[in-house]
Image (cartoon, rainbow, N blue to C red; front, top):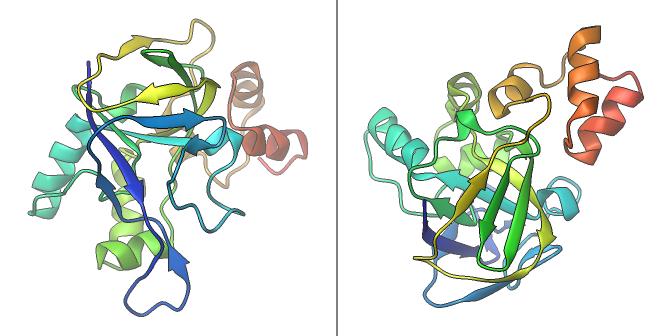
Length: 206
């Protein structure tokens, strides 16, 4: 595996919206710093729902982008889904909370899938994309930064799967907003899932 693209967003207003968003990210040349909050210089505007230590970096696999390009019948540029890193040969359905990626000095740990929203639909210009995206279960994944450093396109990536109970991105999408069975509650809590997911489970909301 290797990094195909490193992408940053800038504040912009989407058609039909009044607020600014950084969802449309574009590939950049050269190295960029990743710290605990993500890629330095990336626009993260809705801090209630985006960013933070457990959503610091959004990773998308090249195989998912290829699949979506065929599904939507158009070429998708790197960063189109709001991803920060595009990893060659990766398919997000295989990922689970706790899986890790090493990129030079940088160490990332997967926490949760990206859930589509109204801003995503407006950006894609398709009011049905939220349902299609959820059903497809090819969401890419958010990661926390265990160790920061510099990254750039072309760097090799080492993937290390989590060695405990696997809670995949597809699992988390399928159970989003639903009550978990006792077995799933135990499985989710045993994995290093996003802190908001953990809090929701402990509060009895999942």
